[in-house]
Length: 120
Image (cartoon, rainbow, N blue to C red; front, side, top):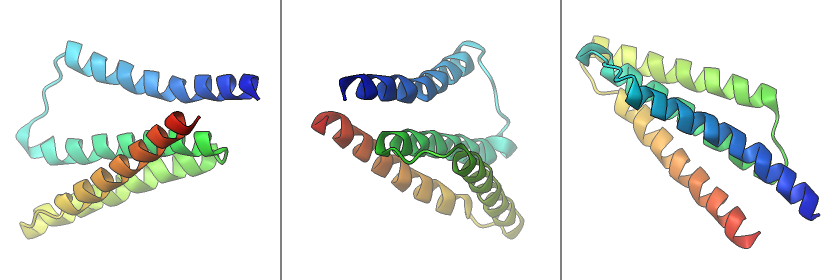
């Protein structure tokens, strides 16, 4: 049982390490995003973070499936970008719908991941 938990913890830490590496590279390389694309970038970053944390949670629950992760990542990103694009055309802040939804899911996944590690 302890070996299985250690292997699962290692598997969970790999996506988080990749996410951390990407954030650090973005900070070191000083990437600048234009004002027109800032909404799209915010939505894309939150879609990616939501997908990674959802994958970590699924792995901890023992139900991770790579096809679900990839399809969820692509679908979330596409729907969020479409909402943002339509909102731009209508002069509405529809991107806030995606940001609020992703924010809620991110906090929910973090809480469940935290509970998993606290309970062991």
